[in-house]
Structure formats: C-alpha cells, structure tokens
Length: 359
Length: 240
Image 1 (cartoon, rainbow over the protein chains, first blue to last red):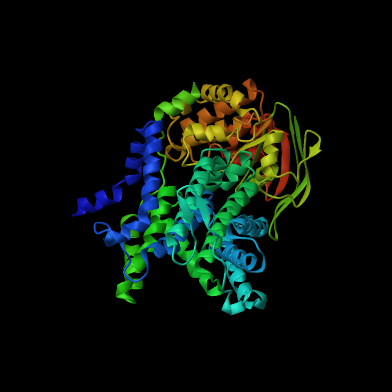
Image 2: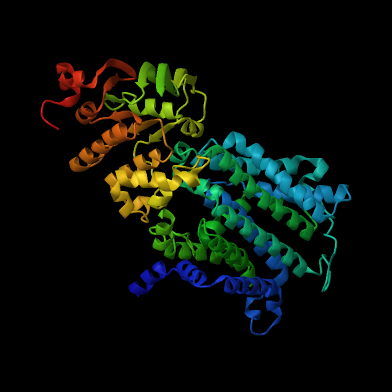
C-alpha cells in the first residue's frame, strides 16, 4: 500500500508525454495535434453516444457545460497562468478582466451596431488597458501585497458595476446580442441558444490561440525574462532584464485572455450582472492552476477541465456536491502537491542540446 | 572607467543606513569595503547597482550621474553585480544562468561562444556542471556561477558582495585567486565587499572601513593590514 502511494506521488505523466512528443517527427506531430484538436472539437457529441455518455452531465446540458464553465475556466486559467505561473505574481482579482470583457460585450452589443466579432478585440483591448492601469502602480509590489491589491481591484470592478445604474446596477444587463452566423464552406454556423456547439468551437479556437501564444512566448526572450523574474526578481534586474516592463506585459496578456473569455461569456449567456463576477471566480481559477500544475500549460488545461466539470457532473447529489468537490481537492492536493501535471523541475536538461549550443 | 560615490545617503523607511559616504574606484583597481554586520556594505553595493534608491548624494560613473538610472540599464552602462547570497536562478541550468547574464547585449549571439569560453577558462568546474540546475550546485560552485554570470555582461566594474560567505576555507582561497585573476588578466575593476577582511585586504589595492553607515577609514589595503587598530577590530589576533 505504501509503495503504491509513493509511486502515485512520483508518477509523472508529463515526462511520459514529453518523451512521446520528442519521439515524433514533424509530420507525425502535425497529425497528432490535428487528431487531438479534432477529438476536442467532437467532444460536445460525446453526450449522445452510448459508449461515451458516462461523460454526460445529469442536469445541465452537456454542450452548455462545455462552454461555461469548462471552456471559460480553461481559457481563464491559461490567461491567469501567464501571470501566476510564468512570472510568479499572485493575482487574486483576475475576475475583474473577465467582467470588463463581459460588460464591454454587453454595452457595445446593446448600444452600438457592432457585432460580437467586432467587439471581441474591443473587449480584449479594454481588459488589457485595465491591466496596464492596474499594473503600472501596483507591480512594484511583491508577493502578499500584490495579492491584496489585485483582490481589491477585483472587488472595485464588481462594486462599480453594482452601483452604476447606466449599466443596470444590481439588475445587470439583459438582451445582450448573440454573435452573428458564420458562413463556412461546409455550411452555416449559427450562434443562438439552441447551438451551444458553435460557442464551444469558438471557445476552443480561443483556447488554441492562447496556447499557441504562450508556447511561442515561452521559448523566446519574454519567456526567459518571466522565468528569471519568477525565480529571483532582484537577480533578473541585475542581469539587465527590465523587470517592471515584463511584469506589466505578462499582466496585460493575462488580462487580455480574461477579457476575451468575458466577451464570449456575455454573448453566450445574453445576460451579465455583477453577481457573476465575485471573488469566488478568481479563487476558483487560481485553484484550477494550482490543481492542474502551476506553469505547465497542459496541467492548467486539465485543472480547468476537471474543476469546472466535476461540480456539474455530480450536480445530482445537490448540496453534497460542494462537500465532494472540496474533499476531492484536498485528497488530490495531498497526493500530488505540485498539481496533476506539474511543471518540469529542470534538474537536468537534455545533454546533447546544451553541448551542441556550446560548440 | 571611474566610479565615484559622493555624499551618498540611503534610508530604509526612517532608518538611515548610509549616512553620507564618499568612495572612489579607479580603473583597474580592486577596492574593498570592510566592516561589521550592519555597517552598510551591502546597502552601498545595492545602491550602486540600482536595487536600492538613493535618498541623496550622487553616483558618478564615467562622468555621468547614474543615481536615477534604473538597475537594468546600469548593467548596460558597464556595472555588474554578483549579489549577496549568490542570487543564481535555481531552476535554470548553469548554461541558461550564464546566457541570461547577456540578456541585454544587442549582439549576444555573436559574443556568446567567446564569453562562455572565457568563463569556462576561469571556472572549469562550471563547464563540467553545464547541464545541471543552478539550485543543485554546491555553495562554491554557485558563487562561481554568480561571478561568471556577472562577467557575461562584459562589465567595466564588477561588484562582489561577500563572495566568501558560507564557503569552506579551500574554496575561499580558490574564489579569491580567481577574483585576482579577473582583475589582472581581464582588466576588470572590482569593488569587493567582504567580512573576511584578512583575505580582502591582501587582494585589494585600497580599502574603506565602514561603521554604522559611515566611512571611518580609507587607506591602502597593505597599510590597513599592518594597522594595529584594524588588526584588533577586524582581523582578530590569530591567523584566519
């Protein structure tokens, strides 16, 4: 029994995955990636087939659950992971950017003729702007102090929305328009209450874009800078890394992803109100990251999927589900304190690679 | 290269840590700051490298007052620091640690191989550990890495904050030999903060003695080694 537990602690799916990926050549990787994306895209149909319908959520519609919370949580976790996982800043007010994106969609959707596709960059822009405005004065703070300030920011945004009658105050805003249809070669893709699949694919595209962006940045100079800042901020500054600028960048990118999630959320639910943007969401998103494995994209995706899906899957046990949810968190975090798929600890890197670089 | 600190004052909140000191470092010298805990040695270095803001006074580097320049730009000007407690990146390999030492250099790709070679000549041990994570190195190796990483920026002046801290006597000897080599062979000017006054004074050209935020004595290092009062206060009576 004991050996079983310790092997569970040491079990390393990430390294197995990395080894598998390293063993593939370029066309094989492309095929694998396309197959995985196709599988992810086919997920909404899983609820209808007898051999996969164990996935189905008993009370809510499965495809709806895949959009919110699952897709949204994964997207936001990826965004927050840029801030918390990559550059090591604790942000407890991430929901603010989600709210700014959602309210952008609601306000522009109702009062202008812009459609969702046009509002998406605006919502992302506003969220990023909020990131800059919050980041410049606060990112000089570190650790706990930063966490408290960001937490305050999250509440300020919510309370401002609550008290601004122009945007509905506590009643929120209803009748947010759906996105217009997209004409594709294989047919028309509608976006309305009957077509959760379309929203799911939309979120999936955003998630894939975010993953692509993070992976690109990670291997380039910003990734190096974030890594250095996370490990030792003073030393990074002494190496010539403009730490404040890179911290703001990571904050702003994270904010933009949160804003994108907000736009999708508002155009899907057709209704935004302050109570959808409570401190709980910030904490839940942070839990997804910690649960899945801070700093590792796939861990974060897994964490987001699991923590968003589990409460919906066990909704039939009603009030007890929160208890089961909490217990699951405690048990799994005990067995895997670094998360399900922790980031690479980098005790050693591939020998041949580094030697080649020296030569 | 010329570094001049003029009437420098630094506060931590309401506490004045540096109470108006004047220090000059000339091209090619090894200058050492010695003093007891809390004398302000580390604060002085951190202020020169930009990690602590200046309250008043000036830091003149090559004729330019840099006291308002952010730390990451001072590296570009030619000031590098191996910080107290080494400050290496524990999760990065030795090679990655060295590479990031060149972070700001515009033509780092061209310079990289040459400067890595230079560092590995000084510290052959680092070459053996090249793929190992910084956090898994021994204390001495980490100190070597911290100095090597600072050299990657091709500094005009190298600030070393207690390089002998927590090291075995053999390793201390080794590190000080390399510091001398860096000064003599690479021509890098060195400002050295040390508690190991014996070693520091033997290696340095000039020395400043700091006491609670003030320079109490400034002299040639060899003179201080023979000064009875200094021997009494900082060198102890027995051999180190």
